[in-house]
Image (cartoon, rainbow, N blue to C red; front, side, top):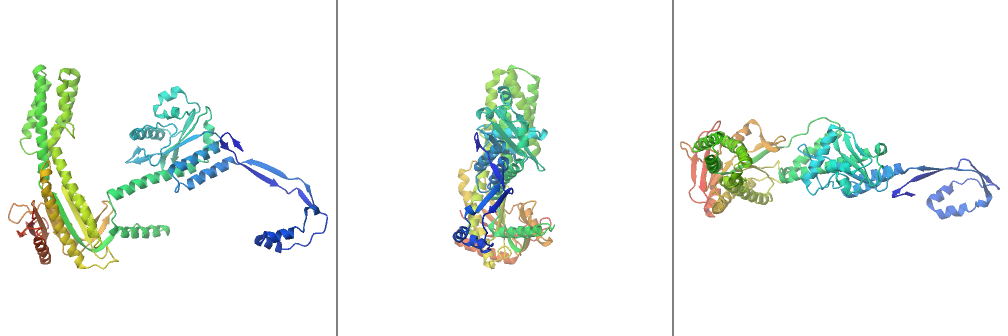
Length: 613
């Protein structure tokens, strides 16, 4: 039967225990083969059954037929089936099935529902249209940010007061006072409910219910819905998990890629932990560890990047301070105020400070003056001295971080800096993919004032492929050649850079294999053992190392520097350099240098050779 638009379900139960069967003749004995015939061949059974015509029997008595309304049970089953198929159906399909099931559970035609999880990023509620885009009353603005703010409002509301909102009658006064629920009018909702979905994990989301008929929804509606809430909460958990999986996958793919060369080891460790967990053991997950791998380290730095950054900021500050000084003097000429004189004094004092190199302390003083005192004064000028409105607006336009004149030099530095780093990153990404086809290794890079990278290869990283020293020699030759190509690329782009920044190229050679393990806190590999720590110390201290008994830095533009400690490394790299010289990639000015002693490090030597432009 149907009631309005809602289907009703009934279960019929028949009790025939009060019916007696009488036979007017003697029946043949019971034959067990009849059951066998029924399971094998219906035709054979019917043939036997024809021996018992109904005319030989008389039925006497009565039976009881009970009709029970099981619509609620069927609605819950329909709801459960919708949630069971949520992994293979779209979110919208599941929502439609849930809406139909809730309508049947309540017995209300034309019911509308909304299920909105509280997706969070860094503790802030956000709206994600990929997981949910169906509301009943929450304002469906075209601006995603507005939806996020609206959801945050409801999250804060139900966190403070977890009681549901029940509106049997939605009137114009309520809609005027609650603009975030103007979607009720858009959907012609006359009766409305918002129920917070709360579990031991906290406030997960909200469930909305609306009807186009007045007075349909009341406190009794919540009682009827109690059976459905556990199933709906399962659906919310699924949507939350889907959202976080998408974020985690995107972060993993974009920012912390797990390279194929080492992914197998992470999978192995994870599987071993799952086996322990299944066996109810409490051991911690093992760490990912690779022993006896050969390290390669390279650094492409932008020469004097800190000095040039400070110089660009200094030039911008001077231009801006002179501009505000000129504006202040123009104002005080017509409206003499002692406060303006104090600003002029501070302005001149800061210009005197900038006559020297820009320090962090002086940079902070200038920023505080310009961003706090000057802006506060100019806002007052716009209100009290409208005759200077044009001059003030002109100044404020020049403070725009992207296009303003007061950021010209620093923006030129940043644009040039980014272009160089993007070029280096793109080159390495392409080249590393090529080299991985030769033999598996692990590669990780870091952004500093340029690019630093580590590479590790060895038998433990690729246990299925026999390791040969030729792979290490090949990668070292590639590393040297790639540094030459980066220097060449930087040389060619100098004319196109807004600020001509130059790169320096440094390679650190380590003869002996080391052990590395994955640091979960920093999500990167680090060395293991006291002996191997010396290698890490070298990487951190060689970036500004000088040639012995001089003030000259080892790293210079247009050159590649190679730091080594053993004669074996010297022989190998002189051969690589000689080969690249024969290809006209490097010039014939090879230098063999001794380096100054560093803290905890002595006896370091270096090769340095120019790139052939």
